[in-house]
Length: 379
Ligand SMILES: *Cc1c(COP(=O)(O)O)cnc(C)c1O
Image (tube, rainbow, N blue to C red; front, side):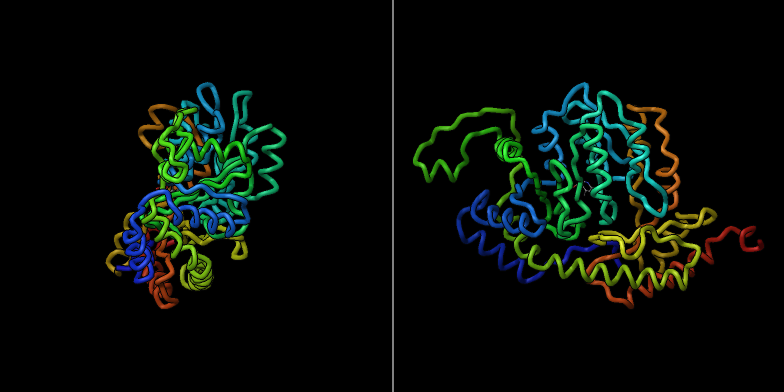
């Protein structure tokens, strides 16, 4: 089965893991620090903070920025549920913003403009499928409304400048992302005070960590703010360091496969829309397509499965998930709803070959023919 995504792991990761185990120091040590420095450099940032997940990263950012009850945060609904959940964790209200269009399924500045109130404190951008939001446009928007600008950069690691759009950014190293530590995440922020707070809040709000207490020979510590256990361990950082060395090569492979997809799909499935212009700056995390309105997505998913091709959906819109619909009924985002009703995510990962892409495109073309309702065929 050709999977939608697949982690690339091998002997280098095994060796790095074994070395971390042999070192005798298994959490928050030299490997975590080196991972943070390498990750920051790659994105053109001064500093990065490694954490347990992107969800933890988003929570820490909002917590450290002091966002809380009575505040509103603009978020896309076309995202993974964690983006909105983090807003609820700090007691604030997520306000869902529509996407621009099927061709540009990124949060619409015009709709964000309309959703702003006197209570709006921040906006969380999400670089959907790896395609970057417009840096200047969102910076100008945040400035004009005096909002904090946060990136959920889970889909776009390894692209220079990602994570430096605004006040802070969250990354994910979950197993299906462009690079993985199995579970893991990172934060980039350009504010010194914020990064100090986040580092403290990552570990219970404590003023010193285990290693510092060992080095300073003093077992004393204080707790100065509400913190969590959102730390990254040395085993994950060891795997992450290996993955970081390979990330830009993998992103380049993803880019080439995506371009190949665009050509093949244009030839063989002209009724299918591939969002974004081919030259759009991207980490090519996903290969989303928009199916023609008349086709049955479920039938296509089954047809493709028979051809050995897994497909999936990014995403069920967050505002339509039961938990959110119950909490915030009556939210209407026409472009997001149309996109999410017709979106299909095709396999894309660095272990694929151009022949795999051809097979997916052929299977999709065949599926589209087979799954078309009779009246459309006659028309
Ligand atoms: C994967 C993902 C997350 C959550 O990442 P975790 O590391 O699993 O917490 C958040 N936002 C987006 C857009 C994601 O794709």
